[in-house]
Image (cartoon, rainbow, N blue to C red):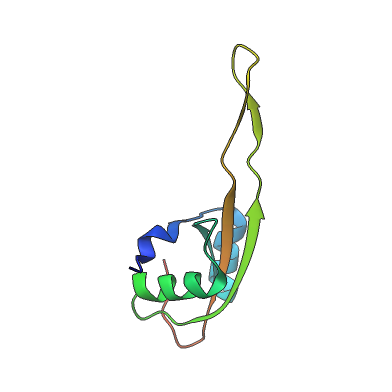
Length: 94
């Protein structure tokens, strides 16, 4: 069963993402690493009603290697970022 909340985790709020949201209606989202562009588009349109997605770009990020206090190495999880572009007639996401 399709659950859009298992695909879109959160909206990323950074200085660059806020600037793009205001000028170009592009929003940065943290999404499931296994999701593809079609699933991300459907999930955004299902979660945020009244929004029409015109484009999706995705970027994969590798988790950083971090050291603990006892010099043991650990690794943060890999994650995926999606830049979602909204069409002209749709409302703002935030």
